[in-house]
Length: 169
Image (cartoon, rainbow, N blue to C red; front, top):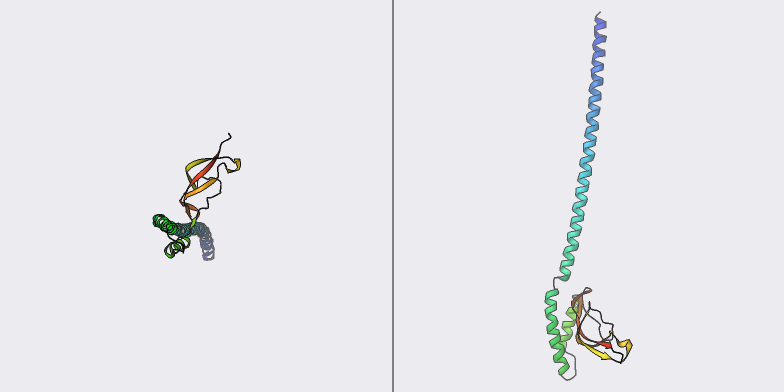
């Protein structure tokens, strides 16, 4: 009989081991599932952080690009004065004016070409309208009263112009 008791105990222990093994497998599945969820969440957070850093760097670069806009706008008045002084003086180049134009170019400031072009309210400010006999000059910039400038393709100061208006007589 002792052999029968041992066999019964082994059967009971095997049944208990089976339950334990089943329970451990369920816990392992749960751990794998949680691990996957944590890993996915961490990867999303890391990707969000990298994207936020890239967005911040782009915003910072954009800010730096236009940070000098106010100062450059004020310097345009100095450039206009130098140009006026240059036009009243006799011959020769004005080195200060040329130096100022070089600074503008280096900072991304470009003149707006207006004379002979079609009027564009995004780039031109019409100060006067002049009647013209030719229909093809209707809406065309006839005279540039003050030079306009852009900074990185954004208007820093619009060109102040006279435009032609065709009147059929």
